[in-house]
Image (cartoon, rainbow over all chains, first blue to last red; front, side):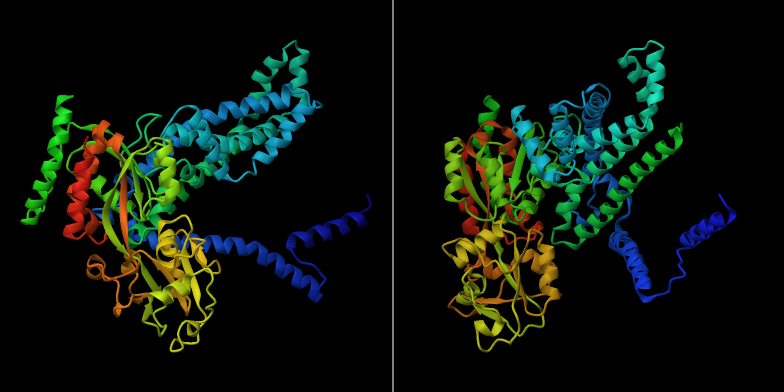
Length: 302
Length: 316
């Protein structure tokens, strides 16, 4: 490589990394402006929404918000205890249902399934489609499942967990498959060459190496589930004023409480709902931060 | 068993006694049987929700162990679950429809309709709009699906020449149904579809208060909470303009927009599940307090005793 070409390449790289171009014709400037606009549009809308919500909920960031139940008699101390605990319970059981199923399905599809078989290709296409299905559909699916299980009242922990698990299952399967696929083929071949079976290779080599990716995908899936109200609404989840105590106890979730309190006429409820939105946001950001932490901490490079 | 049936007999007695006592000024609710446990599932109208939730909270404050969950899936959605036997009590901001009642009958669900409060459906406009009173015919013309009124001046020549911008509740709400079926009474049981619809009444408040020529309707509480941003129209049903208020609605003068709020109780569940009985009895015993706390218009004495009689008739 001659010196001349290298310096030319560097110049281009420098110009690109500067975001500047020698071309100063109006069209390129316009294009640059359009790019900046698209970049900031989303960010500005999001930030102003969050700031607006935080300001309108500012008066209610007190202990009552976390320790009290919803109250009609004393509106200014209404709290989200039932919703917060309900959401935590729902997340726990959603994870319990969705993670083993999702990972098992992904392992089968990646390591064992015959990719040329028509049936498996059909399953794959359907998985991709399922990930794009509106969440309310999963609510209807869960209603049907709960009906088959013989539950009259479906707004219980089990019902919510089934709805949310169905919702995030495709996401978990897809991200787990990507994580497994990212494990280099040499690792599998080395293990197989030493006489391990496919199952031993998967269980002892492939899967442990894929854990960071799987964990990240799973947590991102769960943080999508925790913000969902539509499928739970479909289940007929109601307002409760007690803590969940079993998988059959009636339960409410934080997004449900926010949804219905924000549509109440009284100002106090709207303020409380704004404060609860920030709480929900913090919960989601916390989960996402955990996902990033796990990815950075355990990521391997080959 | 003996205790239960004895309780059944005593409760209506206590209820009427309590009424006498509370009429004498004693406002505190009588003690609640703390031994009664069980679950009650309430669902239905989000308009009646505050009342049923208030009754639940008051019952819990009294030390009852009965666990009541109150849903808010709308009058129609509530009846769907109620008539399938999934809930014990259904909140409704309109009477049950024939087709809904047919489903109930098919599934063998027998119920009692209890009137619990009155709501003044309030037609609101932007505060700067120079309209103060509509006749009931004009209300019909304004919201009817056949309506040709595009400007306020189309309704009445004396009204300003401003475009009408409508904001109305969603079709799933009992509020919409009541306006469509009982006020406008168009054969399609619908309202005009060029108005913006939202299930969230606060969105309607924002719409009307932010648009000159804006008009909408919703429960009186939403107007009361936003009285600084909106103007309520008086309604002339042939006897002069009557403005919406607790007094006019209770006296029956605010016609045709004063609407009844109901709870529907499953007879079998009332008699078999002592938790349901405890909740509904307590609800009706304290109906006036419940309605006032939830910012609705309490029943007149006459209507109240009618509801109590109906409740007493349920114990079988």
